Image (cartoon, rainbow, N blue to C red):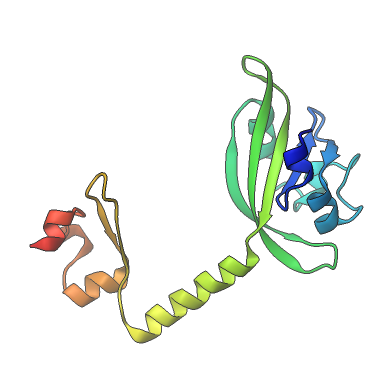
Length: 161
């Protein structure tokens, strides 16, 4: 495992084809303590039966990204941003996969607070993809403009007019 993974604040583990954790960097060990470190089954980390299909996809060579709540070493539920990155041995077969995870609990709380504030104030939000010209509105934005979602073309020119 590289020095970058060892010294990172991002949690990194390697899982073999039998779903056993074979490597865990210090950030992983610090978050989970000894419960889910080298020798443990990755399926035991997540609620039973909930990620078996994701593990099988990763072992089949498919990279995945998802968010998942897990308890930390103190038993507090934390929201992790998780990536399964296959380690390819042969075409179509993975020799295992890397798990890269980051605690995003604080960002998730901030996002919830922002949504509550936006709803309370009655403002709308939008995103504009400058490359494609696509504009995406939230439900409040449609209410503010007094139009139906189906009547808006979702492009910059439609918004500008």
